[in-house]
Amino acid sequence: MSAGDKIKNGLDNLTGKAKEAGGKLTGNERLEAEGKADQVQAQAQDKVDDAKNTVAGIKDSFKKD
Image (cartoon, rainbow, N blue to C red; front, side, top):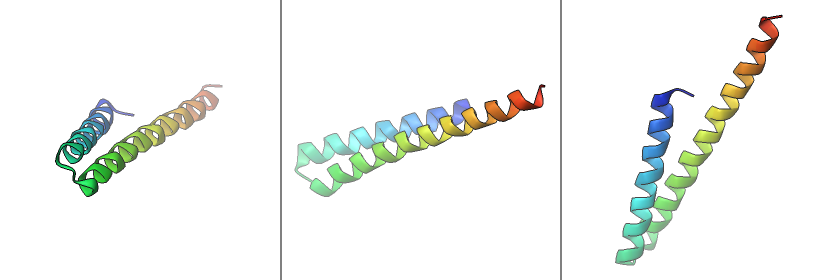
């Protein structure tokens, strides 16, 4: 995962936390749920990117032999 991807996922997660908090403060359940969904999506994308890097590393280790 590139540094840019890591930053984007972190910002998406932070945005989700802000939406969730805003929803809780205002009693807006839709905004709160949207914030939680944004966080889950950012965390899932982080895991996908990590898996891609792991696969790429394994693939590269076979090329070196």
